Image (cartoon, rainbow, N blue to C red; front, side, top):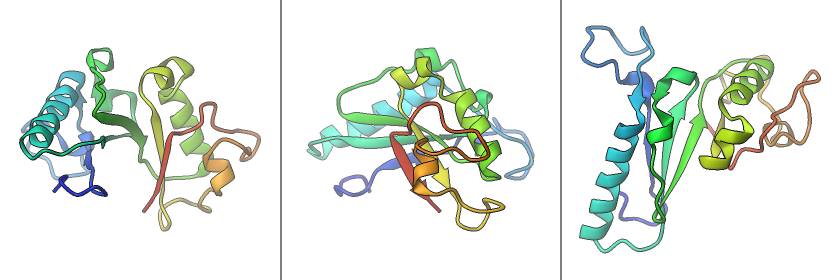
Length: 153
């Protein structure tokens, strides 16, 4: 329930496989920029109907370019902080490569990027906070754009 101050919303395009008869994780799904707008619209309606003031976060998980199509159609508004959150697990080098390919300076100037770290799945070791912020490099590579949001799972 997003009526509570500390509760926000996340969507995971990975599991939207458009009616295909495949189990979760077998095929990576996607959503469109227009669908992101629909989610934001539903959030705004709920917030207005329930007199929720302030801002809410909408986090859209992504670890491939195609997980959110037509990003240029995404509309931003004053009551929702939209974050495109890299949520793939793997080695630091892979995570940095994927993040840098998704969150170029042009993209990051429009929609903030987030970075997710996994305690169990990130191998050989979880990145340090300084590495996850792009302040320090990992094997000579670092995040080009500082994430706005970092979460741990």
